[in-house]
Image (cartoon, rainbow over all chains, first blue to last red; front, top):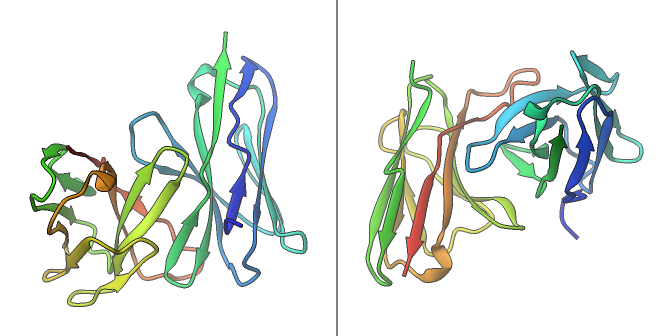
Length: 108
Length: 115
C-alpha cells in the first residue's frame, strides 16, 4: 500500500464546475500536509498547506481529517487555467511523501 | 534571485556512460533533495541532504551517488547509466523547518534518456 494514495483521474469538468479531490495517508505520525500543483512537463509548485481547521485560498479549500487520515481539496468555479495535476503531499521527518497525483482537465 | 536551477535541462546518454546533474539554490536553504519522476509512479526521493557535507539515502538510491560540498550546490551522479534511469529528475530545497515551513522549492527538472 502506498503511503499517500490519490485517485489518478482524470477528472474532466466544464468551466465553472466545482470539483473535489481526495487523498488518504497511512502514517499517523505525519505532521504537515500540502497540495502541490504540477503543470505538464513542469516542476511541482506549492498550491496550499492544509490545516486541521481547514483553510481557504480564493476558490480553493483544503480540509484535513486526522482521525480518518484523509485530506481533500475543493476547487470552485473551475477555470481553464486550473487544468493540471494536483499532488497530495505529507511530511515524514525531513522528507515529503508525494502522492501520484490527480489530473484535472477543465474544458470550455 | 533565481531560486533553484538545474543543469543540464536535457541529456541523452548511452548505457554505461556516466554523468553529473548539478542543482544550485540561492535561497540559503539547508535542506536539498533529488527526486525522479516516472509516469504513474509520482515523485520518488533518491537522496537528500540536511546540510553542507551531509547526505542520506531516500527511497530509490541504487545507481546514484550525491555530494554536497557547498551549501548552495547538490550534485547527483550516475556512474554507469542504465535504461531504467530514463526519467525526469527534479531537485528541491527548503529551509530548516519551523512551524509549517516544510515547503520545498523545485528546480525546472532535467530530462534524461538512457539508450
